Amino acid sequence: MKTGLKERQRNIFVHPASEMPGSQYQVTSIKRHHSLYSLTDSSDAGPEDEAVSAPLHLTPLEKLNTDMCKDEKTIKDLIIGRRVGFYKVRGEIGYGTFSRVKLAFHALTKDKVALKILDKTRLDSQTQRLLSREISSMESLQHPNVLRLYEVLETPSRLHLVLEYAGGGDLHSKICNEGKLSDNTSKITFAQILSAIKFMHNINIIHRDLKAENVLFSSSSCVKVADFGFSTRVTNRNTALDTFCGSPPYAAPELFRDECYLGPLVDVWAMGVLLFFMVTGTMPFRAETIGKLRRCIIEGVYSIPPWVPGPCQRLIRGILKPVPTERCAIDQMLGCDWLLPVEFPWSLAPPEPVNPLQNLLDSECRDMEEEEEEEVRGSLEELGFTTEHLLNNQPKDIRSPVTGVYRILQHRAQKSRGCDSLPVVRGMVRDPKREGLRAYRGLRHTSKLCVLS
Image 1 (cartoon, rainbow, N blue to C red):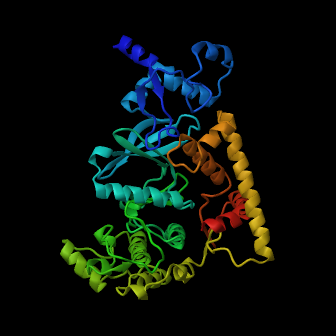
Image 2 (cartoon, rainbow, N blue to C red; image 1 turned 90 degrees about the vertical axis):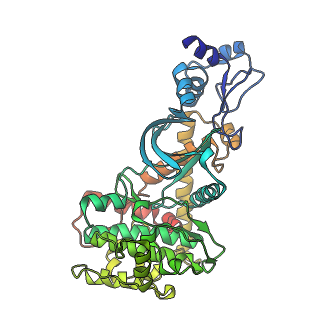
Image 3 (spheres, helix red, strand yellow; image 1 turned 30 degrees about the horizontal axis):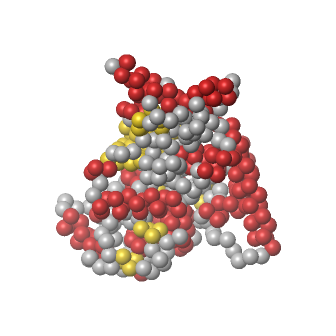
């Protein structure tokens, strides 16, 4: 057995995604020599040449490439799936109908990620379409309260989505285990969901599967809206849709009537159900059968416990209206009495028309983007990525291993500048030291996150 593995080791070459579109790190037999200093292969370099030109100290990237081609344990891990591309795979942290989610670590940056693994042999044409939409939507959504997609890796039998790791669990489990949220926690959580949905709708993406299970938390309790499998992009927000999507307890009345519907208003209804669940610990519409649930939702029959604060009651009633056009708009929700005390570390408003102040903000935003880009490029150089690597593997290519490293480092830089800072509620007791840091970060990044939101 050991001899056979060594024999295979001599003929193994690991192809990067940049050279094989649609395939990621496929192990094949090939009789070419591999250059240790690039993600691309070199057919004319001989072993003697490599021995002479090999540097005394390999960069992290060079060492990783060497291990993936020559180290017996690394090669074995790649073959049995304990490694996928640049990621070391660990235990399972979740599962779905067509997927499993595992914890993984990037071998170079050491960051934790969530690896969503799909068995390609089980994906029918409809599931493939949904997956394609999920990837397309997530590529467009760079927002503090939306789960990030870093990279897509493909092997002959599996597809892997490399996602931001949200280590704080999901909203459904939190409430089931700990009970309803406090009034202030509900405000902070709901405001972040609103921020994410506002951003999606502004670029004409509809989620269509908002529910507590799809609201995740980072380790710092920052909300991350996730699971875009039913999402869709429309030409404008008044485009009529006709596909029933989502979970029945969160479904709007028009979905049960088999009518065409407006996507943003369906998301708004689901947010009303989410808010009710957060502040009461129960669902507004409950029934023993889908048929009875359907009648409850169409009739809009629910009751709010009297101990829920009045402003929150008014917001819930303004959202959960059976007639779609009568529901609160997102901007109305953001300006409601219940959410007025909430202060974001970034602005929720879109940029105003050009004026002298806006010109200053735009200039500051450009300076920060250049500073962030310079920081990311510096980190890439430390890992061993050269200018040639970046030219040959554009960071916008979601199936390139360089993209994965680039986006992880970019997100790390953004978080260090307060990107994942939580909103605060005026009147709460605050830690002066933390508040000073928050104010400093917010001042530096208000204009940039204004564009994001």
